[in-house]
Length: 125
Image (cartoon, rainbow, N blue to C red; front, side):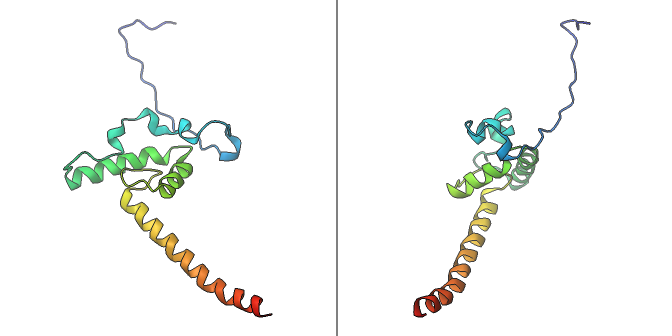
């Protein structure tokens, strides 16, 4: 039955299912499936002179959008590899991404330190 034009129909929001990257169309760029493409960009990027409480609230709302996104991991890696200096990407704020990058650098340096003695032994033998 058709609805009269003046009535409103309420539709429940259903989170997008997470589809493994290997099951998605590999020819399409990851960002075409991003949930945030349907949201206001202002949710992910801070306006100038935003009060702290407002920023924290906005970032939490953006992270909730990211949490239901099927390409969250790809988005996060993009932001870490670029590196994106602003906004919420892949469920992480710019400050959180800096922490992740610092941890990765420390881990990489530790791996290089532990690999050097083995390389020296192999070269000597």
